[in-house]
Length: 93
Image 1: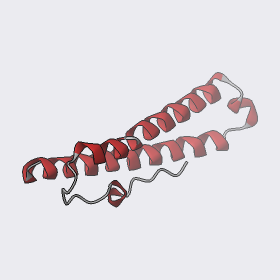
Image 2 (image 1 turned 90 degrees about the vertical axis):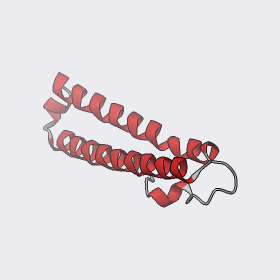
Image 3 (image 1 turned 30 degrees about the vertical axis):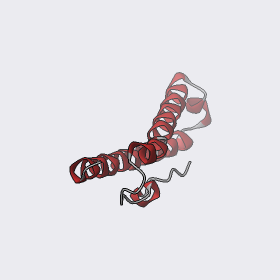
């Protein structure tokens, strides 16, 4: 793999890391809003919608995080790319 393609992969991985971080922030905000709801609202359609949104965000975060595993196979052995963990996109759920 040439240097340009390695650079483009690095840029894409950085973008994915930023998206994951943004989604985690949004999920945390939604979770906080849900937990701040009175119990009767948590058990209402509004609460269910909030829980559905949190679940969807968690699924998206998980799916994007799986890209790290693909990152290694997308590059040839011996390429001097940093390991996927260097992109700082560990998921803390």
